Image 1 (cartoon, one colour):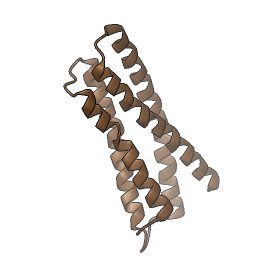
Image 2: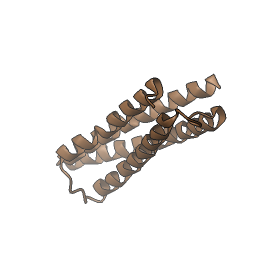
Image 3: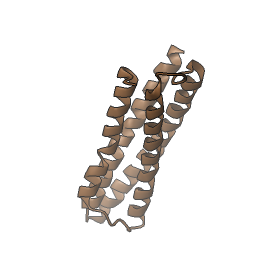
Length: 140
């Protein structure tokens, strides 16, 4: 089980690298006016999104295996796991929201400012902080 846990943590870290960097590319796209630079940023964002999706799948599958195999979060005193699972669902939604925003840039239909994307960029940081506190401290 420890090997599964180690792989889960590895894939989560790798997935988060994409969740941290992809919105940063979107910030730059929102500020960019040069067609060549925009094309390069779009290419980078598409490739990063695909790669991040590939990393997200085993992270979620291994986490599900641990949850079901260990029985983590079942029984009294494990409310932290329910909140963690909610955060994971929100992170998966965030991942897919990045895809929708990227498609708007590809279609030249973005209507949001770079300031909005800077705030959007902070969402995975906050969710990661919540998940880490829940998993390590287990406050409830």
